[in-house]
Image (tube, rainbow, N blue to C red; front, side, top):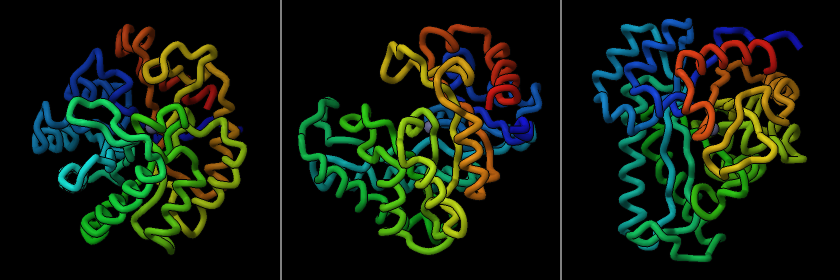
Length: 288
Ligand code: ZN
């Protein structure tokens, strides 16, 4: 395959979050010609929403997505209402920052006030996720902010997201938001879905006229993986056939950003952030 267009590269700000604050990330990306980022809400809050919007404009950097909404399941009605209210605020922030979509990490089993998992009712959690997305759509759709469900690897089903396959995400889109370009779609993160034998078919299902392919997240799967959350690999250092998955995305009509998202406590978070960005730029051209 030909190398991807350089301008499609985006940096999810988690990739250098240990080394840099958001303002430094925006400036660092702009210096390297990276014109897209996907920031996290806590980083935006630390700088301030208006200030962030201004810095993005000044640097000529736009968003490839906004991280994140979701976490819908809760033990009681008040908890679900609080989650919905917080998600509405996330939609409003995404609008202010002119993000193309709000990414949803939907949440797992309900937790108690201390953050401990307090239920084994996985089907119930999945129902709360469906209902929560449906309610949030009533706010997001008229406001014009697309919602992108990110299926997470099944190892996160308990604590982060109980939508674990592209098929499940596609089913939710069918149920809650049928039709073309209906404001609900999918963020395809190779780390979470590379293993799925139905991946090509489900990408095809999400593409085309339905317009559900809203984001494409890149990193690599290391063998062995030393930490369930914080040991993602740089593209090219693991076992994912990145060009193959990109070819499926392109065949399904996706032409959007390629967002590098690497949580790496033992390696990339310890390196010079300029070196990390340079490596992202290089690997995007050589192994993606
Ligand atoms: Zn992701």
